[in-house]
Every structure is written in C-alpha cells, then in structure tokens.
Length: 344
Image (cartoon, rainbow, N blue to C red; front, side):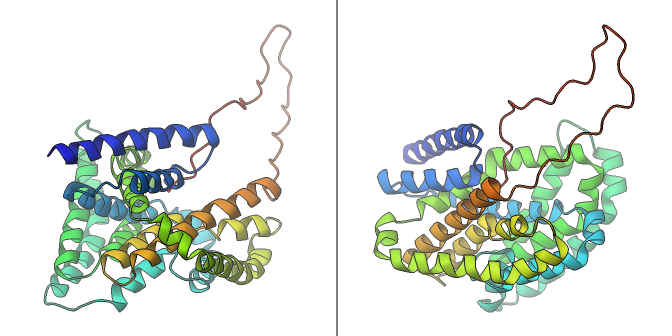
C-alpha cells in the first residue's frame, strides 16, 4: 500500500506541475504530461500499481468518448464533405496515429468469444437509447451538485470497458460512437459538458498520459533513433501530400495552417500505441518510438503553423456611434490572458 500511495503522490505532483507549465508556456498539457511521465519512468523506475493501470485505461476511454461528444452537429452538417474527405485522408495516409487506427487494431486483432455478442448488443443499445433519455433524465435529475449526468456517462463507459475486456476487444469504437450519439445533448447542456471536461481533465486523463510516458524507455528510443526519424518524416510527408490539396479547395486561404494542424494526432496516437502495447501487438521498443513520434508530430507542425501560418485576426467592427463626453467607450480586449489549452 505504501508504494501505491507513493506512486500516487509522485504522479499527482507531476500532474500539477504539468498544468502549471502548460499555462506558462502555452503547450498542450497532454504533451507535458507525457514528457513528465517519461522523466518519472526513466529516473524513478516506478512500477505501475493496478489502480494506475485501471485509471489510465478508463481515462483513455473517457477521452475517446469526449472526442465524439464534442462534435458540433450543426457545423458537421454544414461541412460534412470537407470533414469526411480531409479527415479520411488524414487517417489513411500515415500509420498508427489516429482514432481510426485504434478502431482498426481492435477489429483486426480481435479474438472472438461469445462475450462479443453482448458487447456488440449493449453497445448498440446504449448508442440508440441514451440520446432518447435526455429529456426525461435531464428534466428529472439534471442541474444538481451530485451530477447524475456525469455518473451515468461514467457507468455506461465502465460497462463498455468491462464487456470489451470480456470479449478480448477494446471499447474505443463504441465509446466514440456513444459520444457522437450524445453530442446534441452536450451541445444543449453546455454546463454539463464543461463539468464533464473538468472531471476528466483533472482526475482521469493525467494518469493516462503520465502512464503512457512511463512506458517509454529512453535507451530504446536512442537505440532506434533512425527509425524514429524515418517514421516522423513519413507521417508528416504523407499527411501533407494527402491533406494539402483538399485544404486548398475547402480551407482556402488557410490551407497550410489546416494541413499542419491535421498532421497532429496526439490523443488517438497515444491511445493506439497503448492499445498495441497492452495487446502484445507491438513491443516496448516500438511503443517508445511511436509515442515519441506522436509527441513530435504534435509539437513541430503546431509550432510551425502558429509561427508562420496563423490566420490574421479579423478587426472588430467600428462602433456606429460615439459615447458622450465622460462616458467610457469600448475597451480593448485583454492580451495578458493565459494561453488557452489546446486539449489532449
């Protein structure tokens, strides 16, 4: 028990430091948490207790659910063609770095058991039924400090996680589709969405990213440095070649900015690599290289995009009337705010 508490204390401090650094330097907290996990894993050599393995797995599922739940249905209907083409090619061009790859891995390396039947059935039932319960559930139990809405979503995800484990599969695909199914509910209940994000990013996802970093071996990365450079170049070139022509058509005049941002794949890249490691599909050396590639492809293209291709801010419309003498006119927006977190 003492060792488990020590691991919890170390990772809690690391998560706090990661959040503070994210605010100070304007870098995604997920990237910093992975890097801190690498430092902790390669210096303290801590063994992961069972509670950390569980929280990391559940955190990855919550991230996947949020990725679906935060889709904007109205915007998606308006830009479905561009989203489908750019997103589809962005997935097909590179290797293990996206949600689609995690879903594909869970299907390709599936070992069918009879548990697959209830897993699929319950997943389909949740995806169909949960959005239809919104009116009754939120009307009867919503807007309470005990947060039944968040508990309900967590219960559903834990059921999927358990059934996926029994079926010797992974719940990443049903979790994403469930999030997509309830995205309209999230859009109508922004306060609940914000609270869900607070719980997820404060308590669950740090353990996933820290745990992923702890699994990275720096000596193995150093021994495979050439492979790392090759995979990094392959991913960046492949995504650029695939996405840029479509970005010129659908995202002009910000085509290069869009292309560079589409080169990232931090969250699902890490989830995919972690799933491959846990399932025995890839070795620790391959995992270490892939996570480093994922981190670099999140940092390098984003830095280039922000430095050289950030779209110009649109000027605020001029006021139609001037304030009377002595009245305060429109005040300029503050520019000293902390940099916004870019998400995991």
